[in-house]
Length: 287
Image (cartoon, rainbow, N blue to C red; front, side):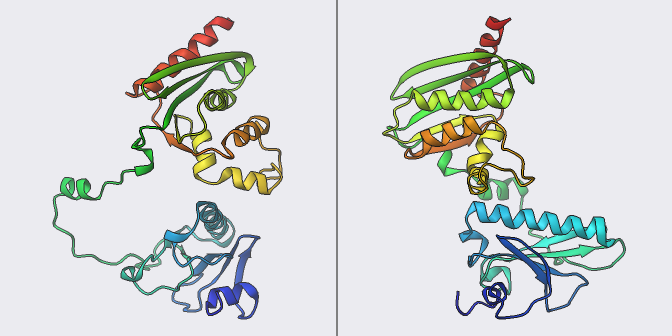
């Protein structure tokens, strides 16, 4: 943005005391100089606030927050840090370029970072009921949507593994499962999703439910975008594990409306428990 001071710092038009820089983010000292080491961390792409920032960019920013914060503790003698973000005018003065304040802390520094509040005086259950977040994307409001529950299991890791998918569409159900003699739990979780999607009607929206954070976070937190951008290398420049299955899954989802939902494993979700039992049955067949 032409008039944004942070964009001018990124372009080099305005000097800054830079602490860290990579392809996606920049960390520099706050010229307010109100606390020793007060650092601002920004994305190099302009976003007005965190609300408008895409998840992939947000993930880069938070990675830099952690990297710089850890550096301050491990290499610079600090004991911890605070992070602060103001989103929206009601939150207080802020620059219209999304940024995180990182304030390094030492024991006994007497720096009062958080405001002293008077207290709401409200019943907390009432407040919780009003403010509780519900992910509207996870609700199946479209009667034409395909719903897929998946799970993978492994006896040993690596070891014999099984996977299962339950595909539901307009009251009809299809159950599929399979196994491999030498595999890993993550590969079975991926296979469950892949086989479910390959056997589903991809001309309508699809809701996938999995208890695997490995699978769900790869889509929801932008891991796949990073891997593709880095030619299937991790941040440590090693090959992404299971990239053959990730590429297969990406091909399936490329032109399909798919939303991934995380469910709690081994809990009270009937469909997830059915998938788990089916996957373990497949393992038993191999023994």
